Image (cartoon, rainbow, N blue to C red; front, side):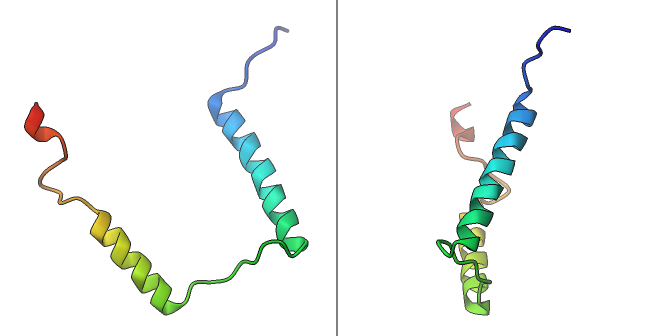
Length: 65
């Protein structure tokens, strides 16, 4: 059977597996610390996300069409 090139989805999935293994190794070795967000940090994040949302009625660049 002829060689078939992997799809972009398969390549991305393989990269994700490798990246996750590297993260797990870094956590196990103590080079990376994982913690949960505090309530204040969650609130700040939600505020930033809301501020970044463009108004639904108008899109950027629509005035040039």
